[in-house]
Structure formats: structure tokens, C-alpha cells
Image (tube, rainbow, N blue to C red):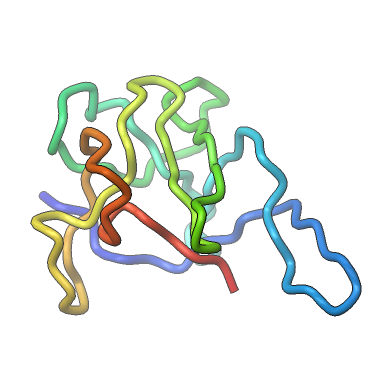
Length: 115
């Protein structure tokens, strides 16, 4: 089952006067505000398997490296597998599944923004 988009909370941001806030490079957990569960890659060690939310367990399965792209967005990489958070089949419709995929030259379906 593919994971639908969900609202999440992401902590630390860095902001300079007159500039938009930016996430600080580093590792994060991504927590669903409604359920308190964390984005988890324990079932996603091969490309194109679904990411999921699961109870917090403080393992590398739930750690994500967030890095800025050159256009102001971010990539989100699983610490456990090294795969990137990806919209399945690059779909643009609401409810598209979220999987972990191999890096694909900065395609938009592997880039994320935080507002």
C-alpha cells in the first residue's frame, strides 16, 4: 500500500532578516501532527517500496537527511537505505503514494518544500 500525502511537522529552521526560513542541514524525524507517528523506512530497503508512518522507535529507520537543492527546495534521504523520498510514478494528483527511490538527477518528484 502506498503512503498518501500527510501533514507533518519538521523542527529546526534558520531564518535571516528579509529572507525565507530554511531548514538547517542535518538529520530529522518527520512526525505526523495528527497521529504522532513518524515517517518510517523499515520496509523500504529496495527502491520503489512504500514509505509508511509507524510509532516512534528512535532507530535509523525513522531518521531522514534533509538537504537543500539549488532551487530552494529539499531532498529527503533515508538514513537507513540512502534512498530519496519520492512521489510514486511522479504523479501530480492528490493522494499519490510516497515511496523511496534512487536519485534521479534532481527531478521535481523527489524535491520537497516546507512552509
